[in-house]
Amino acid sequence: MTELNEVILATGVNTLQVVDLDRIRFHEEYEPHRLDVTSYAIRMEGVLRHPPIAMQMRDGSFVILDGAHRTHALEALGCRRAVLQVVTPEQFALESWSHALPSGEWLELLKQDPEIEWSDENLDGMALTEVVEACGERYFLYPAGRSLELEMRLSVWHRIVDAYTKKLPVQRFSQRIGEPGVGMVHFCYPAWSIDELEEIVLRERVMPAGVTRCIVEGRVLNLRVPLDMMLAPTLDQERWTQLREQWGRSLRLYTESVFLCE
Image 1 (spheres, one colour):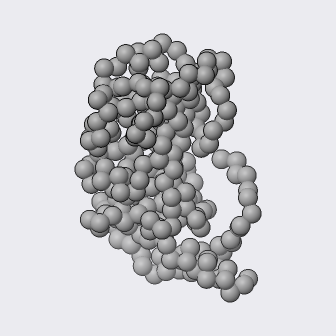
Image 2 (cartoon, one colour):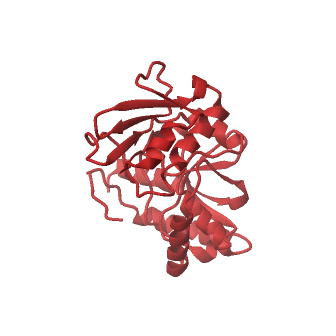
């Protein structure tokens, strides 16, 4: 192992922190069925395979950037703490998922929603989403009156996403995948800024589930954190130190592209 790789791997271990659950906050909603599946998997395996990604906010709490279902699952299982990979704004980028789904009557009802303004132009770059239909029509959606007030934009964003996510199968994609097929529609969401995300969390609000995407350089995976360590009344510091040393010896850095079947 080169000296450079040793430094990088040590940096990966040093991003890991044990954080009490009462100091953890969320920026997005969770999906109940997915939470049930995640909770079952963690309980049956007895480990948390991948640590959630988090950022410490200005009030000292930690917001989960990726891994909301894993963290909620630990809560549901009675854990007192979680192992997080804590990153700074310089170590990650916020992007977004877009959605491909079947068109239908629900879309016509959304077009009639008085709180949502549909436009064929993205004049100010502040559209909540771009809608692309199979016929080639494109629309940009705003709060009625194109309000820039954060609460109003967040409320209308929820109305848009809720109009289909709980009713229809949704395929997420990160880049343009061409025009929608027959009977399909795409909702292409812009990324929100880190400052906007933090402001939403500090206001005790959440974004819709399945839209934000966190890209981290040097993500730490497959740690298999013991569930009993997170369930115990107090943290066993000696055990935690031993685990960190073990992970430091076991981590491998891969720089080539990989395909992961989840």
